[in-house]
Image 1 (cartoon, helix red, strand yellow):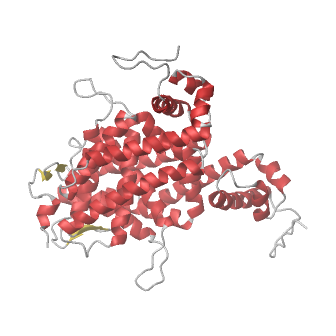
Image 2: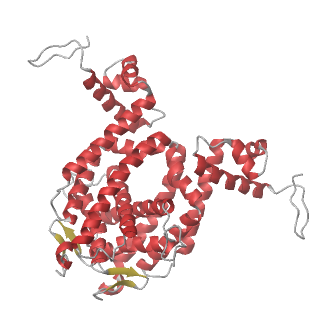
Image 3: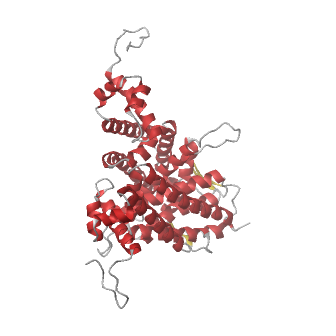
Length: 246
Length: 246
């Protein structure tokens, strides 16, 4: 008996191929994330999807192609989540804030998908690593654009060289990836004992505090020097000196 | 003829095992970084090291063990470079600055070693990825300590929760890794046309501008909010508004 009972709809003996494939990919994401690519078995994936192993091979050909299909689907879902979250008409800092919230919400809601993209896909050889590199390049391009826009808003396009903007974008993306991994790995007890992971909002706020405040100082003409922060407004002293120690 | 001519020293027909091993590891780092772990052949490594393949197997047993030995050596060299660079008695920001310079100088001087640690070791399965995870945990612990020390210097220990410090440390390490990868991958023409890569000092300065300025604001009591930066000193407006657009 393969058909699922229809709910007031036309009953079909077969689940449509598109739906079956998504069920297989759902099962594959969980299995790859839990077991790792090498240890994951097609038997386990088929069982979890509730289908026969030959059907998985019929639809997706091989473990390699199934893994590639998983990476492509999870990468597309992540890009879609970030894109949908960004407020396109907003100021640069709000665009980054909304994009980061979208990113951390998606990685928190799809920890297995994120683990496959961030860890498994980079841990099992070149063709898979390349797919993730392409996804990453898209995200870096978006962040580069936002920082460039912020520089324009702050009227300091000339001060912040393109090369530095690109470096800052890579730093920001690396920071967000690392933070997402950390947020998913740790569990915290919240003030009332109910929370399990740092929320997406917390993670996005940490990133904004970390990165945007620094970018803001930078665009305000302040630069860190070995003698501390120094700016054209001359209002900042090294961190330790500014506040003093208690 | 296997012996190398000694320079005013006792001539030996055999190169000592310890030296031969280092030569094999040198050859292996280059080969793994260029070809990738899977494609790298023991033949190529032996040829590059100037030894026979059986000698490589005799000393290092297998390609897996050779790869593990490479990862351990490169991880130890990176930690040693960062540790040696840090000025232990300095303020927190100078400790981070000196550590980052050590990090970027080492990754720039050893691009193959860094590629093996950052890319290859994470791209070929669990036992290797675990070794790199241990290295990373050490570096995160150092950065956590520096940020904690900075919070103490700034007199804001209570304001910056331990959880947030840990998150910031992960963000900073992820940013530095991402920046090192980017710096090694790109080549720039300097003002006088001579430079090839962003220098270690440039990369460290980008990180300090990015991260430390933000940490400084944070410890000065300023936080980014969806309405822009807000602080107990109330002196900051959102980035776009602070400077205005031209």
